[in-house]
Length: 335
Image (tube, rainbow, N blue to C red; front, side):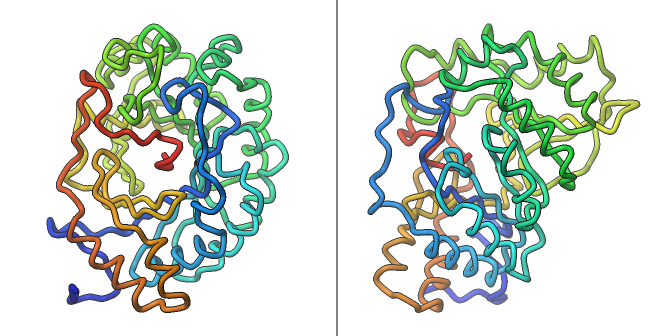
């Protein structure tokens, strides 16, 4: 076993401090986005996924090891029964600085106020297009009007920050980047554009042909907006720019064109209890096994987490021009 000089921190072998945990609480989703999952998905049986109590135990263990920010993701996290009570419990962990959530927005119209009351400070909402027909084509099942109502409700509730996440695909929605930024500006929220990540094998979608780089998006935006780089970081991979004359920030998450691995401070917990050390690699530890083999033993659990830092890789191995090497889908990974 590994003994760290500072037991209150998680530090990998490259000297990076891990203080950000993303937790997937379900692999299920009410959408079927073309870049995220196959049209016909087989979801995990209940016995294979972490219970809400196990998720809370793991969140508490990570917080005691120095994690300051937890993001709850899915699938669509808000479709899991009991998600709100879990968020309330995680929100009571005193050492956490931030509890945040990523959602597709479908449940926000009814749940936004409860999320804020539970202690969620910031919220990211996936929105790739403002065209209803295109939204239906990309999500396969989604209703744009429902999501927009959810966004407006979330804005009225008063989260510290709201950000749209948009995955940009050539010839699907790349011509809408200016409209999406204008939407963010009009509603005084932020937006991040994301280069597609090759996770899982998806049919009827050629990732190399659909690839649209951050540089291309910046060039498109320059026709309508003035962007000024800001050194601000939020514990994520975005490089942020202020939209001159507005309150909006535009972020770019560029795993292919601008590798951000050198400053990686995050790990992911999948819904089946695997601690995933890198989004673009399969290095992982089965924390569900540790939990269930040692019920109530927080010391053994925390040591397993500390030891896992030794296998966190230096960088991801994404290649947009090759068939997916990582066979798990994004809905299983948790964003």
